[in-house]
Amino acid sequence: MKPIIGLVPSSRYTGNRDQDPCMDQYYFIDNYIEMINKAGGIPMGVLLDKEKVSEEVLSHFDAFIIPGGHEVNRYIYEIIDYAIKHNKPLLGICRGMHAISIYSDVIESDNVDKVDDNFFVEYKRLKELNEGSLLKRLPDLSHNHVVTYDTMDIARHDVNITDKDSLLYSIYKQDRINIISMHNYGVRWIGKDFKVTALADDGVIEGVEYNKEGYFIVGTQWHPEHEDGAIFRRLVEEAIKRK
Image (cartoon, rainbow, N blue to C red; front, side, top):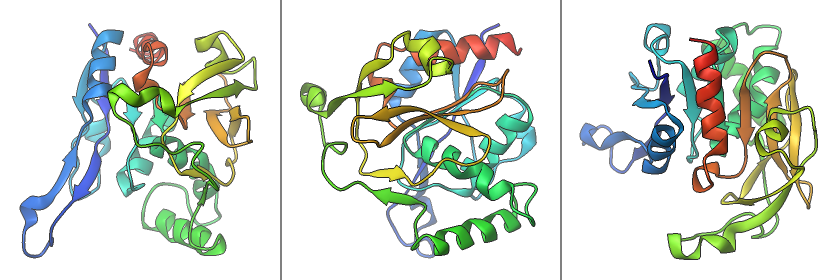
């Protein structure tokens, strides 16, 4: 049976929640669905209840994709936590990589052992210690582009895969790749138990991985949904191994 790949939604709110609750919405991006299908998985949306998701819901999935978006919501960390504790393959893209990069620094705090209210108290404290943001705004437009399908190539630049023992190197089989970059924020640091596996020429962190053998927890700052699908095929393969 094909593995079920949980596609995590992004949130979009365009109205006044008190006046128009129907405008409080989640959405899924078609490119990810297409890539999962081509890779041999079954794409299914991870449905949420007031920005929370239960372990009962997550137990139905064999792997997860956290796509790009504008906010790192509570459910993002619940899914990262579940994937690590149950050894489920996880691919975080753009926003997903941002969340992965600091997960362990929050969860390893003295008063935090799971993603609950204490987690978000510590998350808020870390933000306050870092001038209100756990990300850094990139100084120029080298990584941030507004594109159409016809102008996609203007968003390309090279990325160096810095670790030949990494999952990224095993997927791309080369130490320099050309990628599509659409982001204007980067991560400040990488938390405990994770490692940097890819860098742009200007030093921006582009790839991170969980630094424990036997797991597939990978984050990319770039957007592989606009590539040939190699990383999605590997995600599906890893999910099949664990079924």
